[in-house]
Image (cartoon, rainbow, N blue to C red; front, side):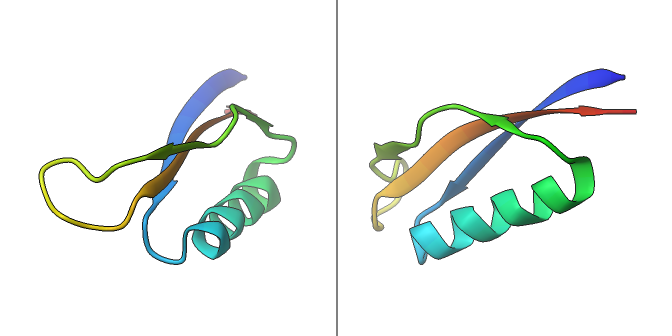
Length: 60
């Protein structure tokens, strides 16, 4: 097994999209570990703030 790390972020319907991404990853890979969620400003363009976090899971 290999430990994989995935960055997750969204600035459009942030809560809904981050939750959906976590649900899909959990369904595919099982138990997840995650960092806290950070709110960050958009960089390089004008837009709504992002929610960002990192998720870790075991995979083959």
